[in-house]
Image (cartoon, rainbow, N blue to C red; front, side, top):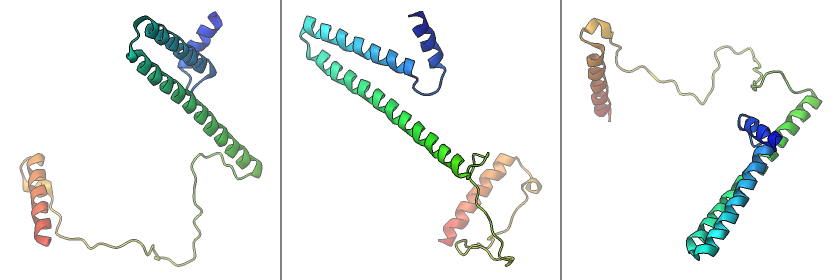
Length: 150
């Protein structure tokens, strides 16, 4: 029993659903269901039936999530194992694309549209006043310019 409590305390700080934590969760929900059943027998209140259904749904959802998480971890481990076997795996966790130069310098993507600069830039420091005042005035000027363009 002492080993279980020690494992439970250590599993709290371990990421993911550990087996010890799942056992403790299942025991807790089973005890909750027993308590709700005893309260239902003692009071004949429908509230305890509803609470029992809610508790059972949460219990099922927690176990379902743990199973799905374990399956996802196994799939990820299998993927890494396959990459290691084929020799395509690398030490880097980021994926990189290989760039092949064709010799055409200056050829760019056809999907990018070049925008022309509109208006002129103003140096805020030369206008005087505080930066917040200039910032607000500049924002209102940009808004009014955009409204004129429409």
